[in-house]
Amino acid sequence: MNPLRPQPPSDDEIDRLFARRIQDTTPEFERRWVDLKRALRQAPPRPRAPAWSLWLGGVTAGAALLVALLVLTPDRRPPPIAEAPSPALVELFALDAVLIRATPLLDAESRAELLHLPVPTPRQS
Image (tube, rainbow, N blue to C red; front, side):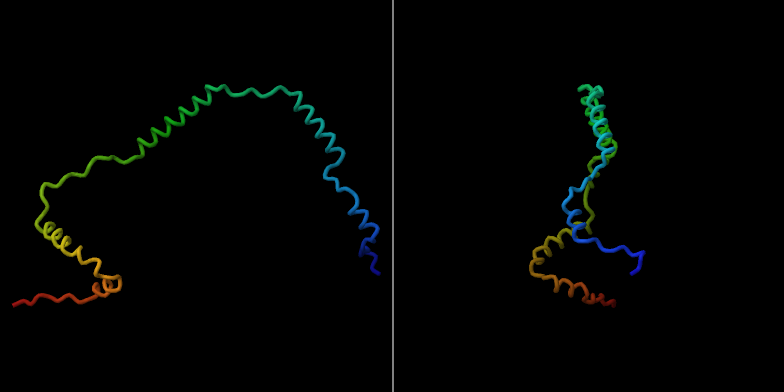
């Protein structure tokens, strides 16, 4: 046998290993933990923030949010009103009003095919 290779543990050693309680801590750690708990119990409590400071913080945050909203929102002026639409635009609206009634008759496939039809050019005399 190779002396550098450890032998597998015997059944008795395995039984002892599984039977004992596994300790997560060492006695030194336990002693330090008890000392720390004792020191924490004897230390004076931390002073709490006064209630008015919480209100002041909330009001300050609200004011900052309000200022940010006022600065970052775009100007809400209404768009300028046109005096009278051009005749071409009036004709376009009229054509749209007539053609909008035919929209349910066209399914998606027919619309795609109609978009690729050649447009006849007017004859010049």
